[in-house]
Image (tube, rainbow, N blue to C red; front, side, top):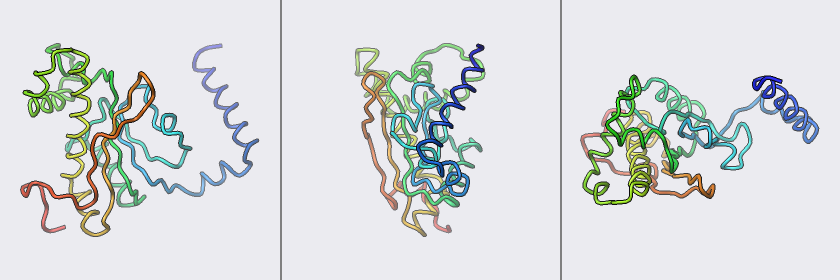
Length: 210
């Protein structure tokens, strides 16, 4: 059996098991999508949102990219964000990074990564903002782990800078923003920062005509 054929076989087994446990399971999913959460996570195959949070399909709206970035020119991310906030009315947005992130590690080198250079440059900017703190850490792995945490914080702040979030904060007092880090070594998620709806920003980032 080819590897992709096994995926299809396992899918049928999963669907059959779900139907056996709850005959109305898929009919409910077809009719309704009302997730309370938007998850912005890393594309790393070891960090699947539903698996590590113990949630079912339909409970978390998910966007994933390399190193869980919120980049203001990324129309993919912005489209997902706008739909989640404006249409799905999510109450919480989670940016979840993870220790051992290859994107963070690559950005902390001077290697030419080809097309990925353009993406990783945004992580290098995070390093530039926090260079004194990061350079003071001697152990390489601890340095990378700290960069993962700092990157999550910056991406949460990038969310707050968008007009999408500020408009929802102003008119609907939601969503609440969270920055989390998942540890591959023990499977535990640690919260590293939060921004409740309406959190103050530096004046230059605030829009006054929403």
